[in-house]
Length: 132
Image 1 (cartoon, rainbow, N blue to C red):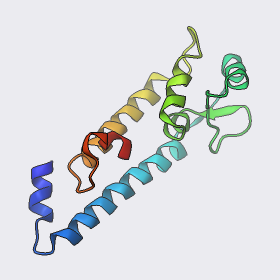
Image 2: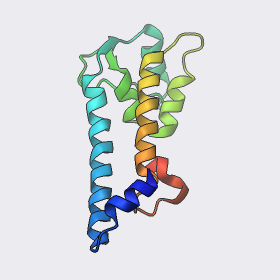
Image 3: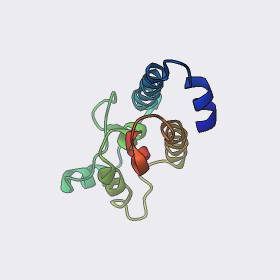
Image 4: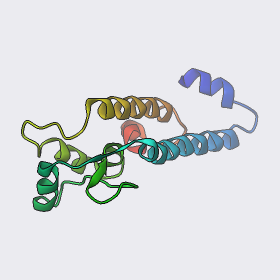
């Protein structure tokens, strides 16, 4: 993907095209972060999830556009800081808090966005996944 980018954006005024490239990648990542939870269905929160959220300030199950007592799994993966998402995985004991399908879709989109971000002109170094 990076060699293709170099051919596409290697024009006489390359710095402007590189800036456009960064803007496009940023727009795609931002749109994905908002649209994935927007179109993901709400589901009722279990008693364990409600109890975990009340007792642990680092557990963040997001409602997003859901009514009270329900949660949006994709918003719970997308919006909190990274350590909060990891905390969401370890509060359940044996109960599955986030569906495997939500984890698969989120992981796939995150992987694709990371591939888009790597090789951009932005000086991210090894922190490219943080850009996404």
